[in-house]
Length: 307
Image (cartoon, rainbow, N blue to C red):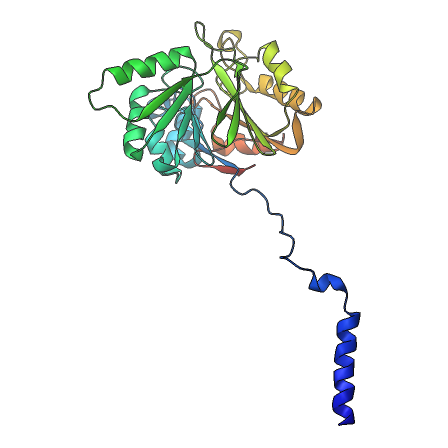
């Protein structure tokens, strides 16, 4: 009897002395996780000459033809989760499927400019039909006019909406804030680069362009980027006549330096190139490790990067 009372006394004493925190009302504080939904997939990483390795006898094209794999490239295009694609042309559907991105996942297509290796109205119509739902196309005046002309000529019209973008005029694209910035590329139209912001994440997609306009550099000073993707069409080639509409790696290195020195890139932010010519640039097997030593990523088609 005495032993039982002693056990009961000790149990009550333990309850009295237990720290109140263990018995606080309500659920425990949530554990903070990384935002795994924020990621990009490089659907394509090539310039306009993706078919050149089929016939060209240069060393770069020969290596690509003989080795294939990551050296082969489709037209440059980027999937930004959860539902945006930047640029979509004749290799678009193939790129989505090869990269494991379902057409049904795409709700918005941002077009940088009207050149055929970045924009093809028929391919966007095919995407909408494959999806079986609405695609909203965002682009400059020339892109919007071309898409409308294509849709007007169709009897069986896909569900495609169009939205004209102008430099520096931001808009909401579902979960992302989109800020179009001027490129230096295509006479006669406002070729656009894109900054996308979502929660505390941000990225820059900069192709096609030569040396960035002063106004674009100025606008970038207010950004805080997790990822910058910049075109490197001509690799190490420094022929002036080639650099009026595109960049080479010496240009790219200066852009990277600007972004880091001006603290536009966050600590730990990553810098990637894209839109690499298959003729002018060394193949992926050779160039990727060289750029990695400089802190730059050379992506291959289908590569995924988290933000």
